[in-house]
Image 1 (cartoon, rainbow, N blue to C red):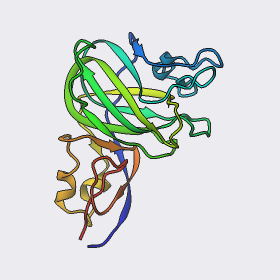
Image 2: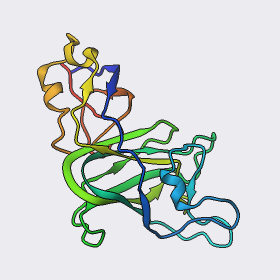
Image 3: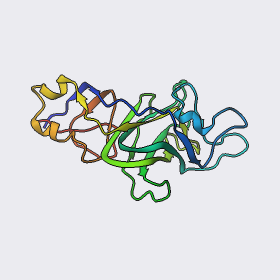
Image 4: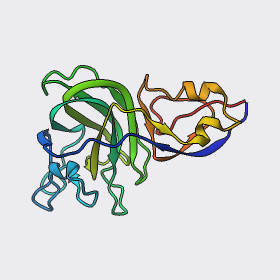
Length: 212
């Protein structure tokens, strides 16, 4: 078995419009030292941030944000945009993601895993679940600081992925690769992602596939 790294482009679904979204709950937000309110996480501007308290208090994780989408939607994934200002403090490493019909009964997480420590947008796909409310829970920060920072949280509808022809027809990739890129389990992808081969680990920030 050889280890090969390929760069592919994956074009995912367009995120849901954030029109009509409202904040249902947040456990912590910094509004004294800066305008790091939780609503900044879904204002469509990656230059603004939701940050948990870092001034008069620094509550430890887990931290979470719950958003009312305004209507019931078929949710099949989300995108997490870390801070884009050159800093990494507060970026999420380990997460859970939930979808709920009533914002009270959340059930099991529809996705769980680890994010890489960089500024790229992280895309996570999972089996479609219908609901009006979504919940992102940050369990661990990239450097184990007590903060959580989100530049943008986008929610993805149930739409098919459009994969780059390189991924579909590359002669070095066996058919098992395509079978492993379905929606049957939580998957993290980047719009311009590296596929690391071999050895898949579900919580890793990229898909890993064996090629012989």
